[in-house]
Image 1: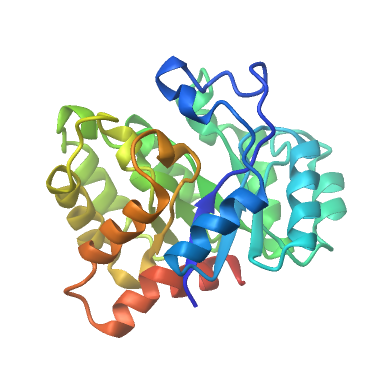
Image 2: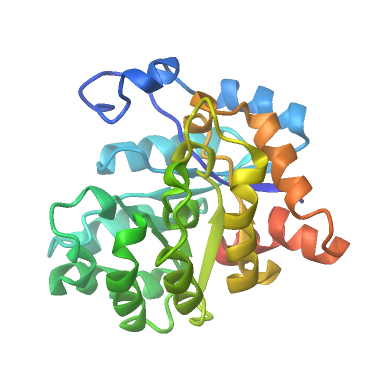
Length: 275
């Protein structure tokens, strides 16, 4: 089973999607299940994981409602107020839904680069194991040192890093991202999504050859057993159509064994999110 471990939906409005700047004007519109179904069917992808794009419990409920209506939406990574004393009430509300598989917070937009180390935030993260939920780590590469400390506080929690921790591909910078990713990957409870790379490069000038060394780093660090294909659709569309990105990932992994390829294209996502 081929799984896209990372995509988004939204009904576009400028206030809620303020991060979509003029350079991304192409995705200033609605993206809904019917739109995604066309591209995943064309690519031969069997199922997807829907990831929050807005930090609201209303969006989490909306994603779960859509997952209940569309079988190919295999899981939802929603948002809950992890730093709020009332977070358990939200978890109790969503946990009974069979497609609720994980939680994400937009850490890289917090003013404090050490937000992940706040005690109130960690108190919420500690609850996730009780509900069998994964946690998606959304950061820029500068947050990796704090992220390593954060992960070490939760040795039994399942984590997955989004977008290979957003290295500075546009500037062809590898260090200290490479060293920090190798260190983070020593924690066996952490997986990594091969996603979001084209939009960390120049939208119009990136090349597969530019991206390949970054993939090679995470392959060495995490191995096929802890890598997962993700499209980051529709964000990827500002730089690369869905099918093109899927083809690039398949090319990146083509020298691996069939079992290793299957792991990256679905097995890791199924295990991490218990699909």
